[in-house]
Image (cartoon, rainbow over the protein chains, first blue to last red):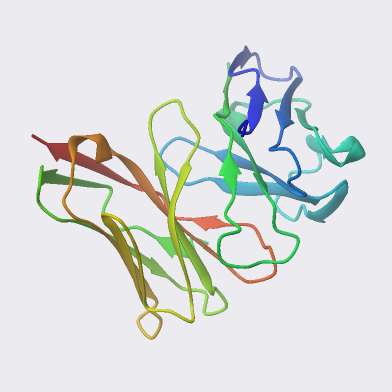
Length: 117
Length: 112
């Protein structure tokens, strides 16, 4: 079974530029998450999709971050304009959970490391 | 507001001995707990989980213990192996498919 795919793996941009990340979840997984992991911290949820609908985007800085999951499969996360504090690893995860239960763990992709100069 | 806390940033253990990683949480609504393992330049990998109706779950060398009254869980690795060297994240969730709340991680080093 193929895992969660993310691209690019690394990205360096200057502040005020824009950037986009792509995620392809595990086939059949209805739930998709984007997390931000700042150095020395644990991952923090940015947005959660159930199929192509947003379940939770309460921690997404909506003035600069946007995300979509067209057709309920792939997803893109965009930052425009980027700030220095956006430097982090952006992790995508997917889960088969439509209702929670033991074993419905989240599977993570390798992440995209963003450096904003 | 850190709802999941891992107060030990690092831990060093000799090969063959027991590794004990600790985690505390503050949100009494959490009822599903997971441990993830992370190697450099890779995403977190699921290790083991436990729901609040249990106090122990075992999977091979890995055992997770949950003490709900103390809002504390721990991961035991017995025996520890050099390949276990990684960062371990504790995570917790409320029910119904909510997202995970992660601790800051504990870096485990298992020395030969």
